[in-house]
Amino acid sequence: MPIYLDNAASAPMDERVLEAMMPYFTNKFGNPSSIHNYGRETRAAIDKARKTIADILNTSPSEIFFTSGGTEADNLAIFSCIHTYELSHVITSPLEHHAVLHTAEELQEDYLDFELSKVEVDAQGALNMECLEALLANNPISLVSLMHGNNEIGNLNDIERIAALCKENEAYFHSDTVQTMGHYRFDLQKLPIHYLSASAHKFHGPKGVGFLYVNAEAALRPMLYGGPQERNMRGGTENVPGIVGMAKAFELAYGNLDQDKTHIVGLKERMIAQLRSRIPNITFNGLSGELDKSLYTVLNINLPPGDEYEMLLFNLDIEGIAASAGSACTSGTQIGSHVLEAIGTNPDSGYLRFSFSRMNTVEEIDKAVEVLEKVLKR
Ligand SMILES: Cc1ncc(COP(=O)(O)O)c(C=O)c1O
Image (cartoon, rainbow, N blue to C red; front, top):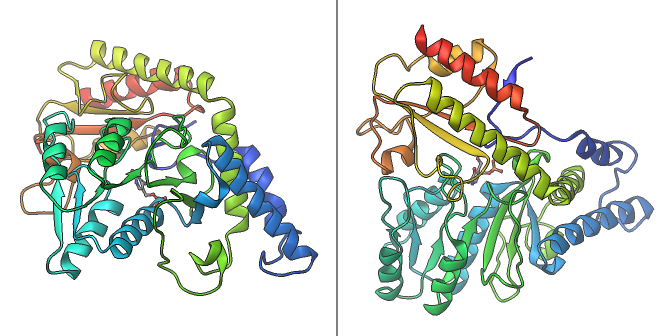
């Protein structure tokens, strides 16, 4: 049986999610905007899904907007905030997902007086909070877009502290929570944040669906014009099976969060210990080796510089282990990982990201380490 350790890229869909979605692919096919019974049935399903998600986040359904995934949610938050408030400054970091970085870069290209500032990070990818404070203090009102958990090196940012700083400086705060939604608890009555992005396939839901949380005080304006869907904020017939599946996946994720977390933390600890004892000179990138400072779902490993890594991922795949790899961008190219480059890793080192889910087992971890050791010895 192949072993899937690439859950940060996409987590397998839970069978119970598919079961919840099935009727909306078959007999419950009405357009939610239709007034007949078929339409009312799917409209009710969307309303229920929105309420399920809002209740778990301790917020109001009116603050949840469905999107096609994390990328759209990030784009929507950034464009809405910048355009509505006519801001000319975004503060982000070099470690953000391209859904944030490329969106901010696009704004910089479109507007002559637009400024993009990046908070400094250290060699482990930790944000320099003094730098963020200075950027907030020395600029006009800004949008701050800083992620909660990094998808490559797993670093967790202190979003409570960032939110408090933004509030003090009257800045708007968006956080890409694509890697943490469904894995960490959020109480949106307590967290002063304007926008949060989420994507269902990162918590065992379907692909192509996500949501944006928009605080009632924050602006939203559409990117897609058309019908009145999503309270006039996103034209287009809703992805009903996807939305239903996402809400089911969300419910399942939070219904068993503590037990699942304990299980996954155990897998990560075991992998760290085994890798340390069996693979010489192995280190961990970013803060991913530190359990309290990183996503419990992500481990990014660093193998000493060498020229044998080109085929590493391919060889693991042949042996039935699915992981992901990257290396620092070699100078002047876009090939490689902008995150590993930003923290100054050596392009000649070997990099692998293993990412875990509740569906992985201890046996799979043991097997993956055994296979990695074998592949590296070859
Ligand atoms: C941190 C982060 N943001 C955004 C995205 C994009 O999400 P989606 O694939 O749903 O567009 C991803 C997906 O890899 C991600 O990890």
